[in-house]
Image (cartoon, rainbow, N blue to C red; front, top):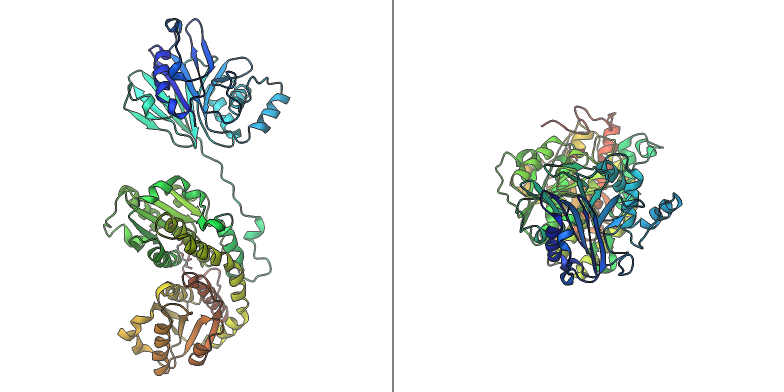
Length: 602
Ligand code: F6R
């Protein structure tokens, strides 16, 4: 914590900086300093002690309309006059005040010293002045821009250069900074208390913004951070697989690992999602959540609804993106709208986010494609980090979306009522999923045989309840999409007796999702109802379950896991079933008829 202030205008800067800095003293009070670019003489002061106790008898002689000030709370370097800010370059042309920590300062300092720079303090902050000196040609903001690219850590800075004297440059990343605007004068400060006596008109600078301020005007440069594409070239190749869809299904265990890696603090039952950190406080105040998406992503949203409702304790809604914006949904700043999209370019979802923003909601995303429109449009979000998905059907991205929804459930649940034991248990089981997914995939040959066996049938039902109801929808969608000569319908198992049962006979197979969970008995009833009408049943159930094996015509087993995680495992055989059935029917499973990977039209 430190406080910084800067002034540029027509008035004498020193008294304004002095009174402003006194207001910032709570941010640090072991030393302080000023630099005033004078009309005749400059004034530089770096001093240990409290700004509130500072008395300057010859204040009247300090004259200049441009200056910066700092009050320090020491981090790097002892409390000495030399370590107080402002810091300057070798030629004493550039003066900088800094709030934050430059994590890579040692390396930068060593390099600058080897290039001949002379340092006069032990601080991390001084490297900023020397880097600006190094990059300075004739324009201060350009030198600052180049300097900021080299820094790792956090900063709020204000900079003055004698060589570009009509300018104050300020920038921030992770440390607060405001620009105060008044008639013919501007101030920058770490918080409003320092400037409110001069102006109430402020612009809060965002991370990576650089304010370039002259006595009469200002402009703000946005420095876009460079994002790294983590994909490797091999990830966009089929390798030993005949189709991307198969390759991507077999990549699921690895995708689960990538989705959760580094995001779990197991002993604390906590989750660390860097992309949500900036909005954590706002998330605490959220009173309801709406999840949106299209197609498979919307099925992920529906599973998320069950997870969030059970563990976060807020009203949760799921909407289809393309319906959401035309429904006049009741939303406000206490609503978070979480958009799920692999491509990050789905037009319906993008437009829905814009609608949510117009209604002042907090917008969040779960997105795979780094830097995509949805990633940029949302206030915050979590990347899937699973590499490219090339098959048109969403497979590994769906599983990854579910895993991230589990992480968000714990992140938000632990902010509210979820206890340590529950948090730990969910995360512990989540970490086992890569292995359990591998085990599920070991049944690929069996699933292939079933695809052959059932390839003559023209219609399928997919039934599930609770967490696996959206998986029934997903199984049906995948079959229609990939083995498009077949018609399929997914529905909640409790519904069939209200109509659909009329269709069941020996020519109408049903895939029943029936793991051991809180609705197991109800699902068993549905299977019995179908069998009583001579319907064929393929059941997905928990390993070793003999009861369902005896009831159903065919069984695919998934390993035992927590109820909320069963959809993650249950979806895998359904994706494989669709892929093998599509191949059995001689179809191109990577490029199903009439479809495209990224749907950028409404
Ligand atoms: C189905 C499928 C689609 C997408 C949907 C949303 O297998 O891939 O239903 O899930 O078009 O796409 P994204 O996730 O890119 O927004």
